[in-house]
Image 1 (cartoon, chains in turn purple, blue, red):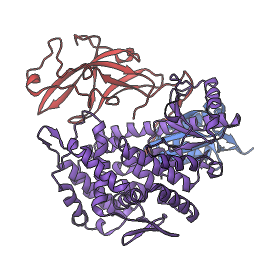
Image 2 (tube, chains in turn yellow, green, brown):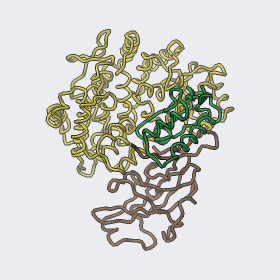
Image 3 (tube, rainbow over the protein chains, first blue to last red):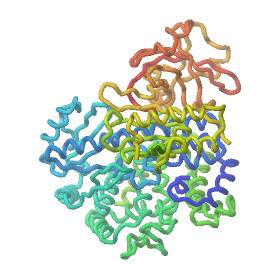
Image 4 (tube, rainbow over the protein chains, first blue to last red):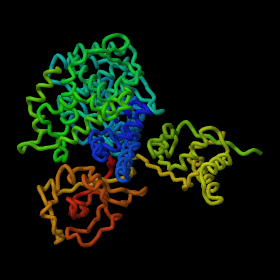
Length: 400
Length: 94
Length: 143
């Protein structure tokens, strides 16, 4: 469904829709999409299914909120950047609108705040004074983690950053990242986001920043489908070879090749990256290519499955009291996932032959598995078992 | 004298997402800055009549072709909506 | 031909001190207070204890689980419990206090106020009355 929303195929969508209405618990699918902050992204696809009035009302209400927030944050970004620029301070948008602009419907990418990075960290206190004079409020005057949080005059959150990403515990890596983002002036460009002009990173640096941000989340709180969607829309478009090469150089210097491989592999398998044929990446054998050469060498499908499982379920330990618990009986999910293609073809015989629809169907089939396998073992949730230190560390060790 | 034609202004863009239509002021537009305007279907229809220059009579005629309503209702309400859009600077005479 | 509807446009303006949100959030305070089941004022339905009526952080204790919908003047018109796992969207009935006897006009609710409300949810085939109390939080969004 996410892949369907991110790249379109009318014929396949019809069959998927017809089949999906019969087999899918739409209500639970909507809740899952909301939890993963992708409800607006799949909004149009979900509406095309047979949904009842109450689910439609919920989706419409949620979607309206996402759209309203998008525009409010766009205005905040435009006005804040304009204010800083008037006072001789250059800055760039991180995430948010800079990524949303790549979506088929930019307003569908949910945001909860605006992140702005100063081109020159030494401008920080001056920027702070300018913002406060303009009515931005920061109640905690500390400067935690190289960023400061403000409430804008219309009571939304704006974060001002002096570093592109938070430092890790790897000194050498921190030094590289710090130097990489030290002089970014030539890698900031003005882009129109639905008629509003905003400064964003050039593609190579944008890709690197997205990757760093995902790694930070993966090693920390866990991240969800929304960040994967960002990766899909970024690469499902033409990125110049020079920018790809810059990005790959950064990845190599940080030793993040495996993470890149598993991330991209999962997006290809489950979320429709590359299937339209119009993007920057293609796959052949064990490799993913861009027009200038090798993008990455894929990891095993087992590792990709493990990564996908971690994304779908790993973040949920933070959502206390959730009624959705998923049990994994040993290798059950991996066994099931190996059958994905076969099951998908069986379930959707016509659409299964259409490559564009396949990723959509994979997501639906995966969703069904998760829905159908909810149990609690021995007083400890299966989620807790998954989240044991050993499991996560093992995956992290494979990737870093 | 021929009837004046009106057209939408580039400082406003119409975004249609699902069943929602939202008019967004993206330029310097005075009192409507930093806001969004939610349109229902018929308001959205009226706005779209003026994406190319058209007279109010043409817009009313197109609305009558598309919708049914008691006599005089469409004419009155289209005129009212257009007057409002002109007053707010969303439409201008060309 | 489609039926004509009167053209309607509503402005949502994002300005300092004037921003009128389209909704408020509501949180049930009982989970934070460690409550499990909550029955008050003699409104215990026969099957209530047997089936249970938990107040949990993950449901009624979560921001976004409820919304108070506002009209264009910022006046509350409706309170909804979103996507209750059984019943989908439930309408909430507000009361003036914890006796749950006198119904409160939702239009009189203000942001930051402690409110008392009930929902009736179909659990295990029977209607169950759930009584909550909590607080409204203003300004923020509905997502």
